[in-house]
Amino acid sequence: MKKILILIALLFFGFGFSQNNAIENNPTVVFPEIHDFINDYDDILSLSQEVILKAYAKEIKKQNNIGIIIVTVPSISPYTDIYDYSLDLAKQTTFGCIVIVVCKNMRALQIQNCDAIVSKLTDEETKSIIDHHIIPEFKKGNYFIGLENGIREIKKELQ
Image 1: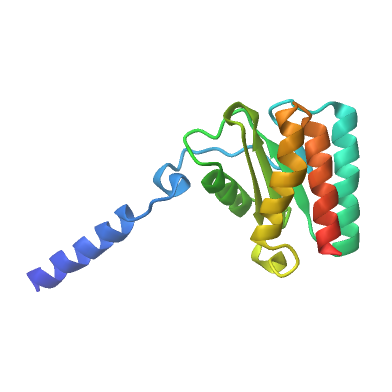
Image 2 (image 1 turned 120 degrees about the horizontal axis):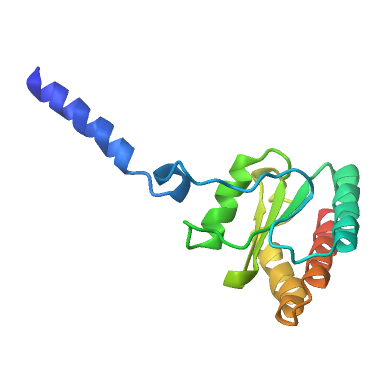
């Protein structure tokens, strides 16, 4: 009986410590509040640019029933990888099916696609959009144009 209790305790603790995700290991991680299509917490967009991007996102939502949210953040701490951060952020919201995360300080960008749209927008297509339409403008400091280009290309792929 004692051996069974020890085995159960070890299994319980093993599952508790096997989590490798930053949010699971650190319950104090606080993600920015997703309140709209555009959530510019790093202040890289002007108000008029936010309005334009929001209009594109609303149009895509209306035409395809697929939400797109953009979140800019000054830091992804305690995360070190934008992919993990964006994946966990996407899990925290039911607002969108596509989450675009920009961390200017890290020079990092990630687009997370929900499983429901992978047939319409594959990871390879997403990577191409980032590499050919967003990053070239980001390198010039044109964050709005890069995001605008990205949303337009996403819209084309979803049609």
